[in-house]
Length: 290
Image: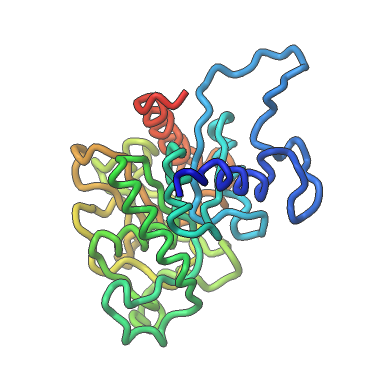
């Protein structure tokens, strides 16, 4: 499969408009491509390294399209590759050429992954291929000590991959919960979270209590190995996780909210993106990828 790597990357780049050619949706606007390599304006070009973030699922639909603009808003020399729809072994080859892994939001994880197959009826939609893909991507990223950032489902997947479990449906399992985690339309629910003092999340955001968006019906139950809770709601639902020690040798942060859907300037959006891309830049330089 390694011999097919160039064709796989070409497929991913063409599919998501990074080569400036026509995609499934029609012609690509140059302003939407990953960067202008032929700068003829006379403007000074950035000397910041170009980094590549592999996203477990990215496309131009409403739910997924903001990941790219969110990253670009916080680091202007970043490209994204969607790893979705590739055969798993080919996606793993593509990940070798990335500087960070973003595990995106999405459908429920099939409960057999956390030994609660009896809870299938409490879950909603599944994507069994995506489960297999993301567990494989996460495990390889850990082996490579690649920076990993998880969002919503991504946080839950990280927890399960490290031996944790999930609450399959908050409203039915915990009907007395005071906080509304998903009641309104997409990303419209908002609630307070408390950021744990001394956590990495507290250090990068400089926040103790703040309002975030919410769009999930599942949550972390048993915490996975080597993790700690970095933020929590008043009803004790974990809202962020990270390594429980700074000596793990790699960047890992995951949040239950959707930072890509928050307004520009929000510290729970921009500062976490900057921390992630900063670590991707460091990974890029340490692996001599220029």
